[in-house]
Length: 436
Image (cartoon, rainbow, N blue to C red; front, side, top):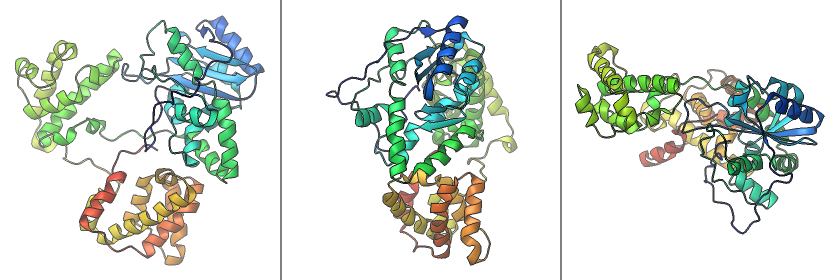
């Protein structure tokens, strides 16, 4: 896990007065030989109970999101630090784990890179997601360890370049500590889920995580930071061309795209559309080794953008099969806007009552889709139809049980339209990029 996943309220630094978490068994040697891996596999197979896992990537340094270190801990097996780069895959370790439950923190961050090396859970428990369902105000690993275990954790190596070799000892100690208390956190959080009646909610969420695969992004180049500053469709075409060649180069070189040229330079060049390398290098942000070394590539990309016929320029707005931006609902469909106002009021109350963040009760996009285009059924079948549509979109059954009645009621009885400034203010939280 490269970083703590931030909660909506943010994370505070660890309490300096709390005692530091330390390794109970000392720092294990890194496993990077077939003999070493075989020994780890044997220990894990002989261990008992769930297994805490974590992975370190090189976000901000490498194009790929592969794992550069895998950490695990199991009762009776101790802690192991495995260098996945040294092995074709870790399927032998996966076989040793078998059906045992994995314990991860922010599992959605680590599962993809663990799958790449042959590690797939049969069952899992996500300590971050469990804490969210329980209403913990801050859910970063260090904060949970402090509040539950009473120990502080240093996070100074969270943004390190884990692709470098050899890995420094302080980094390995940091990595080993990330799995040191996962089993203890799982025990406490699992008990609290049972006590609050949320264990089944968590089970469904964890089961969803095991099979979840994010959908490919439509027009990923539109995620370029500052793209709203692009001046017209021709500039958008230039952003698209620059983004595409930069991404291809970054993948080939296995570096992050922003290390070649930053997003700000892409936007500046797209607006200026310089016709040669000299002019391009005088564009704000176009400096550094990546800008100079691949200058001809950037110039050719801009040339293609200038040569595109108008009919082939990208539209100003991203194509989407979903509803429009919430801020435009009042003008385009006042009744839909009123339905959304009613639903938001009810969901806010439910969030406070159940002590669960609104975004965990239901992915906001699902609710917007149903409220923008409600099922066309008789009123008596409305709640059932809403539930079926939420399930189709990807909601879990516990979410449907809670949310379908509220959404159906909002469709039957829309709220009074809000004032324009209230609509814009209310729209803001739901217009952020979403992470399911």
